Image 1 (tube, one colour):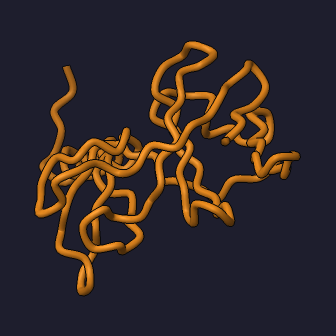
Image 2 (cartoon, helix red, strand yellow; image 1 turned 180 degrees about the horizontal axis):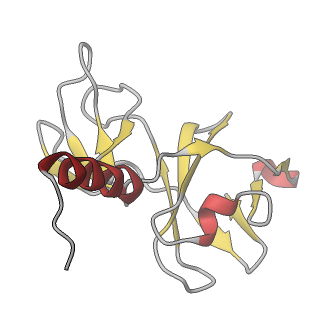
Length: 140
């Protein structure tokens, strides 16, 4: 067994913590489809290959949304509107979930899937209908 110095222990812990939260990235490989649908290519968005992966994009009829990988199944995704239901502020990814930031936001916290964890918001981030295949997520 190797003895670690306090510095090595703290630096190692910080590295693990940094890797534990994968930040949302801007989506690429986006196609606008007939009927107002939007297709997000899985091949072009490698973050969605792993559970907990997130990509963000703006869709005219919804505003800013996130596509989240929730399980390894072909349909294991969630799509949520990133506007806080309480303050209307765009939430930011924070500690494996979402935070309604100040000064306009009131600090509501949401799980990665959009479920409310800490108020003052009394409802989660609005889910958006979608279909998923092995190649793409199609947002209605």
